[in-house]
Every structure is written in structure tokens, then in C-alpha cells.
Length: 281
Figure 1: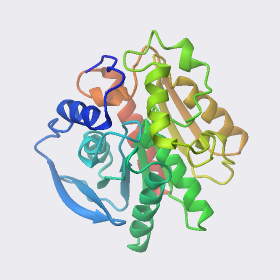
Figure 2: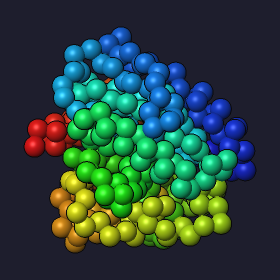
Figure 3: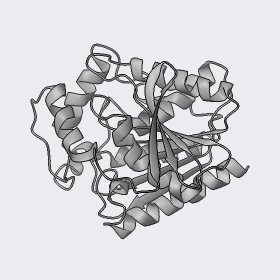
């Protein structure tokens, strides 16, 4: 599960490999996945026994904006729902390169609008590209004049499609999954011929003023480390309530390894405490 993928594979080949690893992971006997449509896109209600508190977690899966699905997102939505007692929904947003930026942002915003219309209090969460998409959703909702989610949980978020962070090179040998070349391939598919510093493609460069509280979790063994570090500084300078967890030696989206890494379980407990506080306020 922790190895650098081959470069040059087609998006379909990458999706097949990713699904082989993650699309059938057991979620627990207490979890039911119920297909639905949300914002015009397929989605999965992630229903954990006893998770019936008010509110909802809108989960946006990772995968470089080109792979992954609502089902792979459920692997991280389910443990968060279990620990918070709050139901979750995992979205199948459109993927690049077939549907490049801003298709995913539009899908996330439409899903969020539908949850708002149903009177839901929403926490948005996501990993990797899904973490960047969660942040872009906050910006898009603000631009549309909508009430914002009460908070956002970002696991190893990819916030800079221009790949300008120093860790993109300095952490390349430590990162067991990615190098700059891997990230560049995904960025090229996602942004296409557009501006990689557009604030909805790279929310690191946006005006963050007025955003709700953020929880950022990242491992030190990531080429994306600086995407989190710089985001936390920028958010603080923008008067946004931000919490940053940096776990020494942890790889990209280490929360996937709940039950295998104590750091993953501890991080999920901190994330659950954050979600519970935000929904209670």
C-alpha cells in the first residue's frame, strides 16, 4: 500500500489500481452504505450504527483529482462518523482529465447547497486533493453568498497546484508515495491549460478571511508538508481559527491506517473532538 506508483499510467489504469487497494476495504459491521444523489452527483450515505446526532459530515475523497470515489472516501468518513456520532455522506465528484477544474469544485458546491437546503449543519472533510477541494468549497460558498460550513477537517491537503512548496523536493526521498513528478502529472490533468494559482485550484493563495475554523493534519514524511504548513500560517494571518497537527514520520493521509498505526487512531480522535465542538457551537 505504501509504494511510489509508476509514472505514465493512464487515469483508468491508476483508478483500477487504486480501487484494487482501497475500494473494498472493510468498514466494520456497524456501517451501511446507502447510494444516493447529492447535488446531481452520485454519493454514498455513510451510516454508522448509533451515529444519529444532528449535523452531517460532507466527505470529499482524495486521489489527485483524477482517481478515487465515494467508496474510497467512505474509508475515512466511516471512522470519523463512528467517533463523532454524526452521519456522513461521501461524494463522487467529477474527475480529471475528463472533467478538469473547476468541475470538482462545482460538484462539491452543488452538494453543499443541497445539504444546506435540507437544513443541515455541515462539517466538510477531505483528504489530499479532497482536502484542497474542501477548502475550495469554503471559498466557493463564500463567493456565492451562502452560509459557510461550521468547520473543515483537512487530512494532508493538497492546496497548491503550482507545486511551489519547498517540501515538494526536500521531502521527495522521505515520502513513500509521491515525488514532484507524480504531483506534476496530477496537476497537469486537473488544471489543464488553466492557471494553477487560481484560488479555487490552489486555495493556499486565496483570501481566507472569514472562513470557519480549520483542522489540518499532516505527516512530516510528505512532499505536501508545506501545503499544510503554509496554509496554517496564512489562515492565522487571516484571523481564521486554525489547528495544525504535524505527526513526525507519518506518511500521506496516515489516517487510513487506523488500527495499524497508533498515530492514525490518535489523529482521528482529535479530528472527532474538533467536529463535535464545531457542531455544538
